[in-house]
Image (cartoon, rainbow, N blue to C red; front, side, top):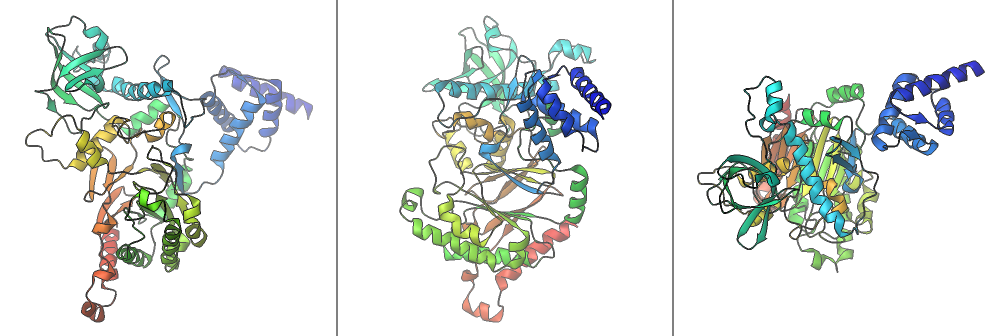
Length: 551
């Protein structure tokens, strides 16, 4: 027995020493006990090493650090819920180190009340996140690396640091930086090294909305007066999801626990027709909205496989937050009524999860992002009636099987259109929703507008990252419903339920569908007598069409 323990200790020390990690005696004793009941000790130890390297830069492992790594590894191996809702405040805090050229977990605990240095760091982190992505893009690869790779000898668009532009007059260059407005009517581009005045009067534009503080790539030349004359202005090109995951080297920026691949394949085979139903502007104080909810729930409850997830996004009342503050008893009754509506459809209550995301005008601590979920004091009756109801933050994330979905409720189209520095180019026929989606995904940030127009908790800015590209991005807005495929990401705006629209998304086939629904109250009395439940039949036909298309 003693010989076996001694051999186990020597083997463990060798495994960790190969990775440059030294185990303290107490940690070694704990690890010897931990590997006794493991089916595959080698795979288990390698998982521990990866977790320790990601969690700490210390090459000497204490007993406490080992215990944390063991809990993390065992937590991943435990059975996971196929549908995981990740609050914004639980998103992993990962930073990019430009010196070591790799991502690492931050050991700092984010604070809501941070000091001014955190505001500066917010922009530094955003810049590094986009810059590291562009450096891997073949368009911006330095010429010397292009030569080694067998290229034509010159980089197509090699980026020049702004401090290196001093004295470079009349030469065509490509630069990257934040688009800022130092003073009224004058714009500049700045990176971490310098600031350069720009002339945007004749700049051609790519798809996207250009606002202050967004990161841009500009082509042009420096004039003799020190102003950079921009000939073309574009958003930072996106990066394929697989390439971003490779750069992360196993680190998770999304949150939650990735499911087991074998169990995931089996689950997807059994749920090929599954749907995520997204509804926005669910005004619970309006009878016609409750009628529309009845119609939607009645249609989907008749399916052999009801949707596994319903996302209800705010605002949950038709009046603003200032008026809502004095109406808590009435609001509690509204959520209790929602619980009664859901309970009328036992199939949905038993098999579906309901996620509630607050929107503009809902009760909360303020307008800063990320916003916590609805207060439990208001939605307690709903959670008691529907145990599967989740009060999520805004924004929040959902792991649905193998799909990563980002949910964000804000009137972002109207906000970004009002803050745009440049008007749309002549002849541009792309809908505003496509411009906004392209901007969000290329900026790798859900709300790339100045902080004075949309405050953000500085040390929780990472919760709004859209990197790597998610499988689906829901930008719920009161603008007309729309869907848009950008690179490998399905972008969805369900529109307003008050206007009779919602969206359905298949996490297995990655397909989005915009649906219409009419309230039962809008049907004439004579028509109700002749064809009772006509609204429900309309919804049923819509769902049947989606299932048939997926098949």
